[in-house]
Each structure stands twice: as C-alpha cells, then as structure tokens.
Image (cartoon, rainbow, N blue to C red; front, side):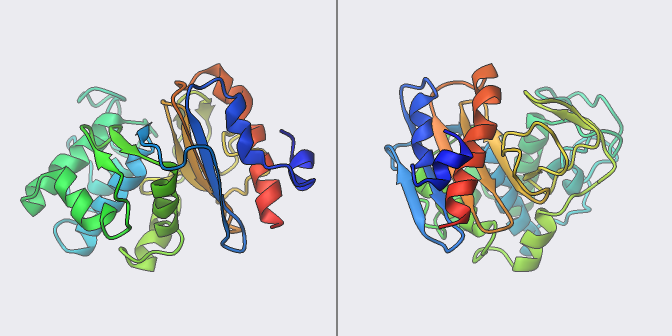
Length: 279
C-alpha cells in the first residue's frame, strides 16, 4: 500500500496480509490517541528482538530503584550498564567475546542484554523474568506477555500488549519521564555500526534500548520517519516504532525477517504514518 492510498482512507494496517506470513496482525495509535487494529491482535507470538524494549525498561527501573546505576561496571572490562543498553560495550552479537573496546563501536549484541539481565538479578536478588513481570509487564496490563528465555530475544507478546508497551515509551507511568527522555536520546553519538539486515551506518544512533532512526537510509520505519523516531524490530518478522508526532505502530508476524521485510517495511511504515498522522 502506498502513502497516497493510505491518505485516501484505505487501512494501511491490512498491508500485513501481504507479508506472506501464516499469522500477521498490526496496530497503530494515531496522532489524536485513537487506536486501530487489524488481524488477530490478541494472538501471542514471539517478538524476538523487540524483547529488548521491555528488558531496557526493567533495567532502567532497577536504576531508578537504586539497585544499580547507568555508570556501574557491567559486562566486559571497562563497560557499564549504559554501554550495554546502548550496544556500545564491545561484546559480540551472540557470544561473550569482546571484539572492541567499550565505547569504540556500535556492535549490536544479544549477549549484552543477557549480561544486563544477569546484572539486575545480582543486584536485586530476583530472577530477571520475575523482576520484569512484577516491575513492568503487570503494571502496564501486559497480561498475555511472558519472557520465556533470553532477555535479549525470547519475549512472547501480542499486538494489544505491545501497544501498551509503546505507551510507556512516550507517556510513562512505571518510569519517571526524565528517565524515558534520556533513554530515547542518542548515547555515544559518534559511534559507527551495523544495523542488522540494513547494513553499515555512519553513525549508527541508539538510545538506552531503542534504536533511533537518525539519518539512516533506507530504514525500516520508513522514508518519512523523523530522525527522532525510535523503536525496534525483530527477526521473527515484527516491528514497533514510535514517531515523535505521536503516531505509533506495532506489527507481528510469523514470517522470519529476510529481504522481503527490507523490501516491504519502509513503504508499510510510511503508509501507516500518512494515514494516522492525519486522523
């Protein structure tokens, strides 16, 4: 679907039906706060790396509660909680090996988020999944959401619940607004890196959990996304983005990320933005 078709009143969320997935659903919040859904929005699916947006909230909650701090050492030598949240610790993608010095490169790392979960467990005395559920998921009413393994990639959730999660990132009630404002600001702004599936980015902006669009082009959140647009996508064919004008979008599917998503997601996101920015 094109942005022109979206402006003509055709529901762009229905574009997920053409993703070639067995199951797909989408939801959006328009600029006036109205919610829109397409497909089985209550169905629970693995959201893979969108998990990091929930994990980041739990880590930031531990910071607010005084169990740790952003500048406390964590992960490889010389790294901190802040480095791990912003994929700047130097840890490899999926191994505990440090392949760069902390603060030298933006290296997207599942291992880094698993290290964060272990750090929170050590500081709070609670198993991380329990801390996440009690501190973040339950207060947000995310009753169908469960962490079933890695704090980097094993959250199962629904479109309905992820819309609730997206609200916390712009209108927080679990965390303090200043915490969220910092988290959606670029940290270690000069770092270059690789956005998985989209190639090298110079620079590669990231917040404390969310990826920030910046000047990346092409980008999964669309060509019309403002530089401050932030969110995350997942390898199971899932995406969540939040535009600073108030429009938000969540889409889940069971078709693994591949070139089809690179070809499809930018136009899908632009159509959603065009339709719901003007609602």
